[in-house]
Amino acid sequence: MTTSPSPAIAATGLRKSYGEHVVLDGIDLAVAPGTVFALLGSNGAGKTTTVQILSTLIPAGGGEARVAGHDVAREPDAVRAAIGVTGQFAAVDGLLTGTENLLLMADLHHLTRAEGRQRIRELLERFDLVEAAGKPASTYSGGMRRRLDLAMGLVGQPRVLFLDEPTTGLDPRSRRAVWQIVRDLVADGTTVFLTTQYLEEADQLADRIAVLDHGRLVAQGTPDELKRLVPGGHIALRFTAPAGRAAAAALLGGAPGADDLTLQVPGDGGVTSLRTLLDRLDGAAIGVESLAVHTPDLDDVFLALTGQPTAERVPLP
Image (cartoon, rainbow, N blue to C red; front, side, top):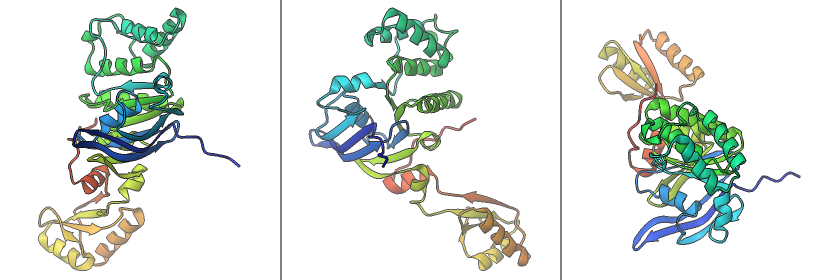
């Protein structure tokens, strides 16, 4: 009989308030080892507070949490020894070089000089910072500073890495570079707890996603499971004349689109349903100028669950 491994992160009834303001209202989490768990929420939803509690930076107001097998409240030193944390803003010292920033972290982790040097060489190569290693961090681009910040969080080889909105402010190319770093870390066995407002980011990286709204978890699941919560998949048909749209509406049903030339027909966008739809139009001699398939995405999920738009999307190259 096989048993599933203990969660890398587990929280039950986690609460936090500041006076009358409730930030976390009893949330439950379980994150499997070697996976990416994404916590989504708008500004003020409680994402950063969750990370701060789980990483021992602030105490919870109630509930229990364990990280890497250790109780966050009773064994904070053991938790800190097992984790790395990267906040929303790069915490590098601009007056120090890249190497010096990493050496500082090696000293804080009590690595020997030989161990520290070896670890720093590995990280500089992994994060493509070898050429910039001897330059002050103040001269780095935003993407380079973020990579250095991530490298600093990995000096102690953490089993669990907390990334609190790690790509905020980065250009699309730098964001993709961070995504690949996260994938590589997970492939090596690291557990990543990610908070983000970029839903493409969660969709690309996360094995499981939780949506946090006003201190409560309103949904959890895989990206595909969450998308199935929201109806609204359709095929948008565009015709050359309003008469074509009217004829198609009489045949297929559906709803008017953005203008008098488009029609939205419910459908999952699968090959079989598309073929059936087009065969029916051909059989009725109704010509279609173009079509587009829309399936619910995480933006739709977020809006449906929270009633709030997500952060502005950043176009990807």
